Length: 318
DNA sequence: AAACATCTCAACCGCGGATAT
DNA sequence: CATATCCGCGGTTGAGATGTT
View (tube, rainbow, N blue to C red):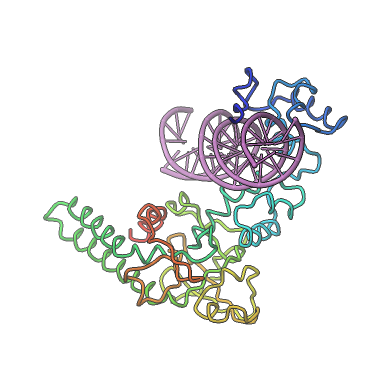
């Protein structure tokens, strides 16, 4: 039963295509159309399986393929469609002329998905992630442990270093407390124009946050706000991906159209912690089921999920 | 300049649905 | 109806490019 994999068929070539192979495939399809992919390689004089030829054609050689960076419009379209369709890359690709499903999938996995994660949005559900607060006790313990280790590394007689470490720890805990207090009003937006997140790697360097679409956030961040997080309550700034607008009011107002106010979240520096939930503070440290949405209960977040953002969080504590 | 980390993207793999026999 | 084959899709991999230390 079943077919042998492509490569096992009598030593057919695999791997990157040469320009000569490309030309053969191109000229054959332009003359005859692809017809049966299975029989095409032989007819075109290629030592490849039909599957490989089809992939090369659809993902690379087809004349109407648009190459290069995705525009902001395309990015938004992908986000919108992914909200509705999920990982149906071919369906999404049909709405983006010139883009292949493979290209969109790659773009999603390498760029958009990570952006959403950094924004505290679950890339699969497009909702704020709920795992941060579920993990908070462990993270605080982890941070305290780390701080203790640092202190232990100091010479015992060095009271200054010890006091400094304790002060840092106290400040960190206070910072977390502030985040907890503010959490119910935090409404992440999927309007990527508005938010700049450094890559995890960049977060460790003092360089300026990377902007998306050239947006410079430096001048947008008000002072005297909760450390790391400020809010710009803008009326009438409609997030086209309203599915993601799940602050308390939007949960209540779901279905009320696009008139509810949209809260935008800015991060003031590269050390900022993105919100991972909109859950009420009172729920945060209780036994939490990961999803309070749509009446669908999902299992508790796994520790591996939590560790996904460990670098981000540890940076927050350091 | 070198080593290492991270990102990008072309290509492969395996599965499932559709179609042919 | 059962089985074989084809095709398309989504997930994953790995080599090369790029960035950082």
